[in-house]
Amino acid sequence: MIVAAFIVSADIPFNTALRFIRVFPYFLYILKSTKKDWNYIGITSNIEKRILQHSSGLVRSTRGYRPF
Image (cartoon, rainbow, N blue to C red; front, side):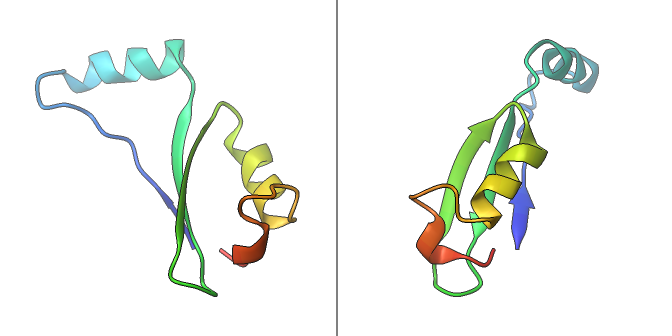
């Protein structure tokens, strides 16, 4: 299971947050193992590539916790 989140402060208008995303295109992601009670939090600029790396076992820190 992959859970994605973007946190916007109540002090920042939503359209300002959207401009921020365009300038800083990074994603915060959370991987939840379906095998063990374990979560991994990461940040990346290429979410599709990074999820594929985790899912295929190329990331040592998450390899033993697949599938997500």
